[in-house]
Image (cartoon, rainbow, N blue to C red; front, side):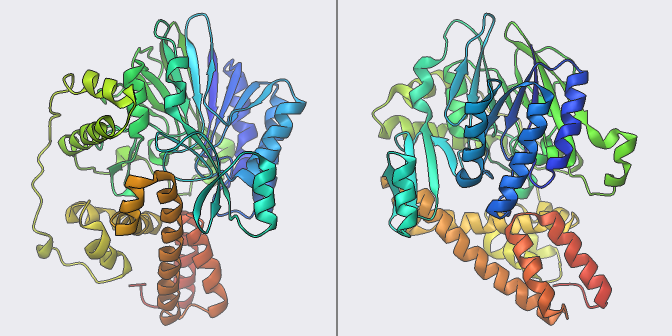
Length: 485
């Protein structure tokens, strides 16, 4: 069985037909659209146009297709289109809740959504269901009509579809291997793993709940997207690289970053899997796109932090096991804790941050106020040499850490985790607006025309740091002003 995997399309839906063409040449019979069919910064109209374009290409391909949301996909834009295609076309299947495809040799678990943010979420913190985002937090709604009624009365600002993955434990086979396909990876231990994101300050940002589920049900093959810089890379459960074309019983593969022309093909055989990468930018007819800066984690120096991450995972498992009336974490903790010894650390010595002299600026201020607790200064200085969009990613990560230490958020997290997520989203929006205003002031001081500033700061809010960086650099070059500091 050959499965094509496309995810993280974001703002380049026009690349999808070419990816599908390559997949059909390779004999793919099944396609999974694995989340982020749109970009968070798009208007609803732009998002629907983008999703419609992608689905038209999918229908023309004739492939059996499973469509899952990621963290960038909005309910209002994605759900109506995919639901329509699901009802109208036999070969299109909208996957909005965890779904198991049963096969003779192995089962496939399709797990949509994100454990972190977005309209489609999974976890173990709340009952499965639909929750309206309201001023009072997350309000349970039973039907789409209930939600629409709240919207008409200006009482709701969005919808979260939440799935508690404890609900699916008993549906997974204990005798057949299960292959997982999900937008996000599980949580690993070191900075050499596919969940270690440079844009998140090199943190292991994968899902602890997925780690627990996979360990509990012996899921050793998992395919994801989401962490852009690892697209096209795979390793086993011990984080040893698995090269393309090699069948393995342990494989964790970041298959796609379609916005940069990358997608993957996974071939399954009796519980084993191997993968093939597709990279459109290697084709001569895509030479014009090669000037776009391409990021990949293997090109960035990353600090090893295995022991602390291992400790974090076990601490969280211990917390869940002792505070909840559920066997899910209890069983996982019992089976996992004795199995893993301490992970080896590379040389962790770092120079004194006070010895490093860097011009003071918005990014450097972000380090001292937000980033320092979770990232060494030497690694931060190395990141300053990367394109501006990565620098801004660190600032955003700093905001997230600042919010994580908020007392009210911490209080809600222990009493009502889903309410805490909604509150966290509100805090993030407020803090990001402050950052936009601060940046607007700096742009004004640098001589950037007033009418160009909103476009730049709005692009920044959309998380398209590449576009922001390019626009900022062209403006600064045009007006010959001093470097933004």
